[in-house]
Image (cartoon, rainbow, N blue to C red):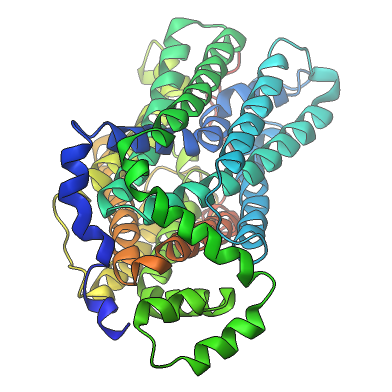
Length: 468
């Protein structure tokens, strides 16, 4: 095991054969598409912020005045998605164990689709008289889909970790592309119709279509040459977990009494807790790298960054659709997701620092926290006296791109390196651990976002807030 921390895991040697058998690598693009759909619900709830603000707006108040429910929507969505996601991830990892099972995947995708169908059905319902009920119903739907997303991601990360590293890279790249897809759909729906309800209807129908196509994609993937090749090892991993649930103590004794067995057999006999501890021991730098990457990102995006205003007042523009409805969509959401995608794509070609330098990669993840004071110098409607330094939208765009690319690059490298640092039989456990780091980072970052927004001041909203 000592050598595993400095060398790729055994199964990565099978990559050339897989590429040959897999033809034009359709299975790789299947993982990209599954990654695109895996975070789609959360991205839709965040990027559809104008629609939900419209629904939550108090009609008795002037259009330029923002209600309490509108102000709290983004933070509430992030928290309501992160908390059940984290709880479900812990439960699946430590109680139900990371188990690659098709019925979990089918159930999760179906449950998320039902949540979006309920949201779609509420689009044309007048909720102004029961805005609080609509708000809490939306948060309940966010929490339910958060649980299903945790189960889905646990299965997909465990599955991708048992395959050559290019497939987990394709999956995380697909997650970033999902963000781009969501923002492009949002912008298209805004430009297609000035009616915010029709725009939202188009928006949610596209999301439902993607999730249904994910079901078909996984059915295809099950029958692909790739999973047929690795199906025996995946089934072996699943079978190994069953006795561990009932005989962790006995397997511990067996492990201690068979020190002369080979390394592979010893790992097979490890109890569940021991498997997690051993996997953590060899991947701890990647674990904390992912954790800090998401803490930094979620503390700023989207709660803080979505409130940043154009560098120039809207009075300079005769058409306010840019400043009122498209600025945040393009300058924050689109640029972030494009940069995130670029960072993950670059990681497939350029892998610096290397697998042998986890400390250096961890240091880069720590340095990303410098973006918090950097974004504080942008045009945020603060009331705490922080200086407004970057008085140009191109500077803000450059910072967003750099921030997003560093997020995608660090996340993708850590995800790719972690399974390669352990024996192949521990790869699915490592995938579950990395998901634990991801969801924990999202949760902590979501909590910190309240502090970041409060630190820079959120007492007022943009005067040009637009409602249909």
